[in-house]
Length: 514
Ligand code: 5GP
Ligand code: MN
Image 1 (tube, protein in one colour):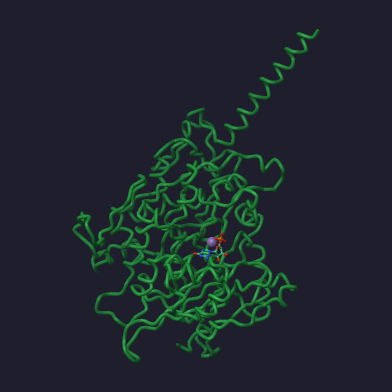
Image 2 (cartoon, rainbow, N blue to C red):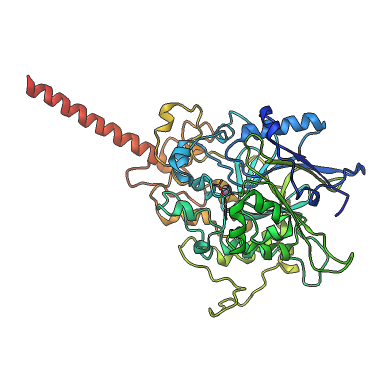
């Protein structure tokens, strides 16, 4: 293991002092990931990692502030490994797969509304408890609030020159071959399938593997998924793990624990770090790669963290060497952009099983090409895009932000689906299909006018005549079934009409009695 980098364990949520006494100290996997701290004078990116977030943004940032005080430095980045719960308002809650009694707004909405600002650049992937209607506005990722970036269904981006790849969702065998066809209003089961990982995304990620003659590099620095790669317990102290969580052993043995396709991704992309969550326990493992002696790539250091509740190990500080001129900001990864272009033919909003180009089996391959790793010419095309820094000012409110969590605020119908201007801009810039727009086009039902375009949002210049509103080249489809109203507006109008009818009836009764 290299001594260039340091990792520092943070035992629990610092905002709960009483939790200190409950820390478990029998963490057998620890030595696999803890390195000696080396002050070699090089520049380091200071990254805080959390397992599941469960909407606890306030507690997470408070914990980070405590660590910063203790260590005397500021974090450059926070990485959250799913179950993030980017809930904008009460209308997003029905789009989150969670029993109604556990539905809670949590704290993200304040960061969405602008009441609070994320104190550190925050990056996250989706898990199995998400505001899925919101996240499927951003299939290729984007800002969900100022300073908070969602990776999309799958992505590879760079931070300070570190290549960070991520896959959102969890594995479910029955849905893995499908396209991403789900959007609000979700048919009942679609709320679940919406967060199930897809082969098409894992296929795209596999294209990040090194050139065939490159047996030594680690092409990816950090890889993220919410659930674990199936088989990972074998590379750590599985006896310790199975003692802690007794059902895991049986599930592991029957191949049901985690995503069975992710070990292949680890071997293909050889990430230096692999970060995960979902199983609500801290666990570390070390996956070696092929080679002999020093002639082999660095092993993949796997770390999964817990959820942010008192006494649980949910946060870890990583310090990773970066170039002395590295900027602590996000940028698109040129190879990933080329992969997205190369695999654009696999993007569809129709509910269909996608036959992959590298599929081996009885289905005849319909593609001329199997390997979608970019050629030199394809990479050359990407250089023409110019500066790949991800702009930080492109966030716009699509669903209405919630200013105050009042009892009326709870009484809203499920959120509409919106064409997100960030998806439109990114896809137009790169020259790929806009899945968000394809999904909008499927039906005008439950498609809303984004909040930033509303006259009183103060976020854009409003033109008084709705028919003349220029929605840009892509145009927005608006639910005009009952005029050009939002579903929310539609509901309150219908309620008003019903009330008026009732009042009319009541006054008729009074007349009759008289
Ligand atoms: P979530 O917070 O996503 O609803 O649930 C995660 C919980 O489910 C954790 O307690 C985790 O241990 C458990 N879990 C998730 N996947 C598996 C699995 O494949 N086998 C077992 N036994 N438990 C699992
Ligand atoms: Mn989960």
